[in-house]
Image (cartoon, rainbow, N blue to C red; front, side, top):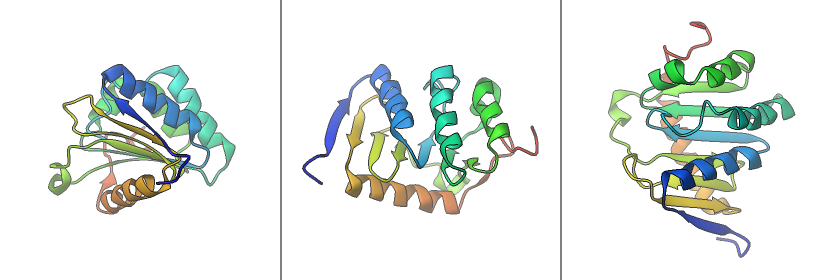
Length: 162
């Protein structure tokens, strides 16, 4: 951990939503987010969508990868996110984990290989918001990519079904 790294505890649901807003705003190149179903954490909020749009517009090589155990919540309750997917289907992707990964219960996000947000369990609000921590962010990104490689595009959020 570098001397400049910053860590804040996440204690409440509002803290978690705020940390997600922060990582979305800070990410300049890529953002990887793993959640159970993206319910009630601000992914239909216009301010969050604007931050994600800014990330995707900044460079055609930027990536937004969303991974969930169940993507129906996104398709049914996040129309702004679905519109963003339709607009940026070349650098934004939503995948669903296979059944053999559904035992993983720790949601996390990684932005630009240096920032991360993680909760310790889907059912609890406690977690950690880390900034400028390349080591921990790199470990979480590696974990995300391992899960991503065995996951599939979601039938609920495929741009073909839009």
